[in-house]
Image (cartoon, rainbow, N blue to C red; front, side):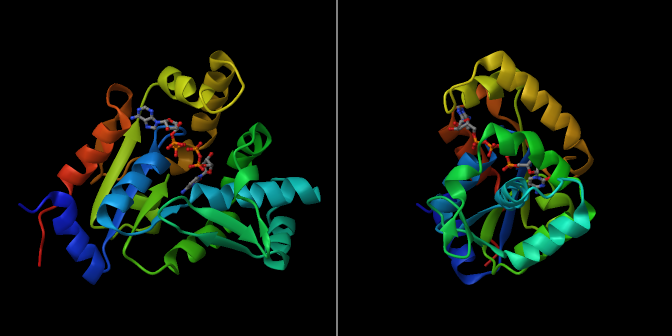
Length: 225
Ligand SMILES: Nc1ncnc2c1ncn2[C@@H]1O[C@H](COP(=O)(O)OP(=O)(O)O)[C@@H](O)[C@H]1O
Ligand SMILES: Nc1ccn([C@H]2C[C@H](O)[C@@H](COP(=O)(O)OP(=O)(O)O)O2)c(=O)n1
């Protein structure tokens, strides 16, 4: 019997299919995108890592986070490369790997300011659109703005408390502090975080990770070839 994954795996292998998974902070986007991509045998693309890497470089160089011209000059002088591996995305600046430094509270606290700059958004979008499909792309505006032509779109939600409890398992911080920071970041990111009208909404608060991945795979449109 052909499963949704194997059937789609065939299309992904031969076609230029794009699936988008957007959602609020810590809703499960990268874990779900990674699981779906692995089931389909394709890479996933974690767009937030480029915003995080731009923020890290700005913080390290002392570039003010809302000064777009200075930030863009710095980014062009220190080009970033997103390595879209299905086992986990990595970000490089020349020979230096930044990946492990991108999920600190310091970067979390500044990234929404950097992501609010239209010039930075255009810089990220150009890098994402240059990637060869097929892939699964996750972020905030993958289905609305970057890949509006995507073949299937999903939007993940969960309550701030559930998301904070999950993040607390990864970081030595208490749940109320993480929850407050997530609510603040949701608020700052709201301009680019609306679900696409044609996205399927999934509340991940009531499902285990495998359940969310299964729900995405089951909702992929029928094979066309
Ligand atoms: N459905 C789920 N049930 C339980 N834990 C989950 C679920 N989805 C994600 N997680 C966990 O929640 C945390 C945040 O998930 P992550 O994929 O990093 O979210 P995002 O990419 O949206 O920030 C991770 O520790 C992940 O393992
Ligand atoms: N496509 C995207 C992806 C991320 N962002 C911004 C919004 C977020 O605050 C940061 C980091 O996003 P990321 O998805 O890496 O992390 P969280 O899931 O929010 O913890 O980047 C964005 O504006 N547009």
